[in-house]
Image (cartoon, rainbow, N blue to C red; front, side, top):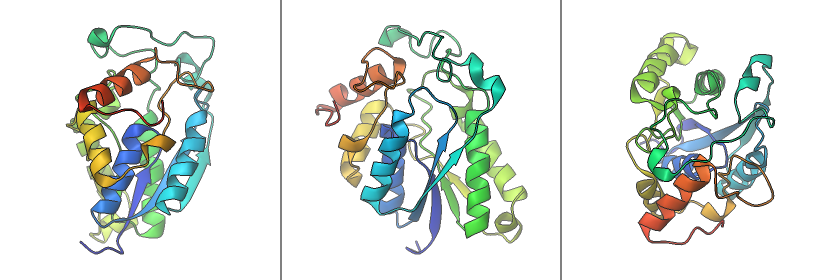
Length: 225
């Protein structure tokens, strides 16, 4: 692969997106990171995204937007309680309150715009379908459909240059993601996954519990805990 080929990497600063960034670098892509502030209660993740991008030497674009209809999610509305359920029930009770309507559609559209503007051949997203919390916009059919949209609706696509939509973690569980992160040298100590957004991870939200499960099953300590 041409090591000078650019890829736009959606970077939240969490375990998954950081692993996806370093996976892209290991595959020879030259990453341009994109972080999005959408009113999330865990805006602490944006500081992690900046730290990860600096460590990777990747240019970082930050986009800030607010949509008034997103307040029905417990990720954007602090008055709503975050889910606090056992690991065995995560992903089994329907779409959780942490779902943000259209979030990945919006993120991928922004990434496609950036890719089109800079001539990037790929968009990299850290979506994970096997160990996720029930979000419909993390499923393989959605990502395949968006890849077609990106090819049909961009200048780079009209010229036959992509962009590809790459989701390297899609069929990995959290244990597999941790192991991949270690193989590609991702700086996991810089990452942030907690939905609560406090000074320290809450340990009770879906994201904290799935992260802890991944490190535990991978047989290694979480350097960010």
